[in-house]
Amino acid sequence: MLRFAPSPTGDMHIGDLRVALFNYIVSKQKNEDLIIRIEDTDKEKNIEGKDKEILDILGLFGIEYSQVIYQSENVRFHTAMALQLMHEKKAFSCFCSPEWLDKKKEEAKANKKTYRYDDACANLPAELVIDNTSPFTIRINKPTTNITIKDHIKDEITFKADDIDSFIIMGHDKTPTYNFACAIDDMLSDISVIICGENHINNTLKQEHIRASLSYDKKVEYAHLPIILDDTPSVKWLLEEGFLPEAISNYLISMGNKPPKEIFTLVEATEWLNLENISKSPARFDINILRDINRKHLKMLDAKELSRYVGFADEEIGQLAKVYLEEVSTTKELKSKIAQIFAPKVIPKEFAEQAALMIEIIKNAPYFDEYDNFENYIMKESGLKGENFFKLLRLVLTGAEHGPDIAKIYMYLKNYIGEIVK
Image 1 (tube, rainbow, N blue to C red):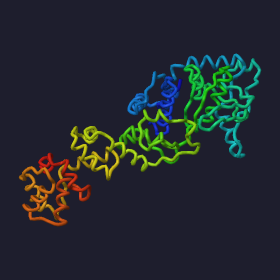
Image 2 (image 1 turned 45 degrees about the vertical axis):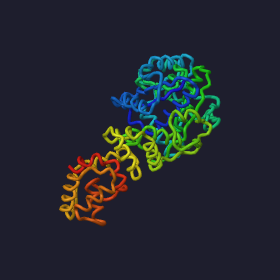
Image 3 (image 1 turned 135 degrees about the vertical axis):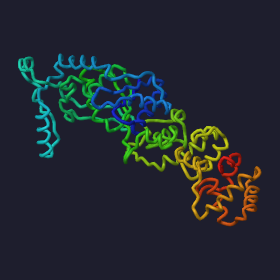
Image 4 (image 1 turned 60 degrees about the vertical axis):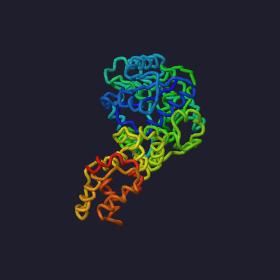
């Protein structure tokens, strides 16, 4: 069993989507289920509707899963496991106030030291615990032996026992902490492989320690994906800007990888992806590379299907859009180019009179299948020629001073000429 565990506290970023894609691919390769676990225990930070948005995005990207679990539904299990650890003397009540702990952290920072909880409450006499009415957290005893995990990308990783202290597993309000809830939930779901970002390595250490303290002996495999450097956009923004889900997936899977070909589908990636082949180095997000990949995916679309992205259902408009792919790379940009053709034209004042004449001639012109015949007719009837003629014709037909070869444009617009110059 594999899991993708997003939090409904903000927009999904490409790093999160990358993790989801790799989990999906590996689940298909292993023929194991993939579950989605919405980590919603932080009620103050949850944003209403973000869980549905996450699931909608996964659907757009073709990421299939067997079920959706909400972490908040497992709180009773988290509480039971915390009580078990306390009963077995593997966890203890901590009465240290947040203010006191903050003071200790500041002192350590001032002395340029890493703060470690000093186990002030670890060995309190029973009577001081039982009769104490002060708010308390629950801390798990720190590990006494090193912890080693198998990582498909970073090979074997060993953590020293003193890398962590006796950390909190239940807050003052008896809400489980992130790592405690994750560790328990992975046990409950029988997770066999955890694929996450390398920024979670320290969390992995804590979660392994939690499961070991609960005598959970299943060996979980890991793959910590290298981080993505530079400012990374949200998936929602990329989609709004006109990047195809297929292109975004293509790029994210390619990052730090050596695919057998540049352009591929998610289904094709399941046939060759190997976690061991992923680079250990951080990846860089480059919007220009994504633009190039997106353009190539758009070119591969059926013309009629492409036309739907620009507001039509017409093969000729789809072919026209492919002509414009020589200068743009997203559906948003394409839609803008095509919309400009059918919108009222803004003609510079110096060309206004000539434009009016050309438009009137085009309105009354017979149908011409070939561009050359159309051009010759308009040129003859208007008396215009040379550079001004072609500049004006482009403005009248496309609303732009520059663009693709006008002959190519005419090939796909000839049936719309009347509407364009109306």
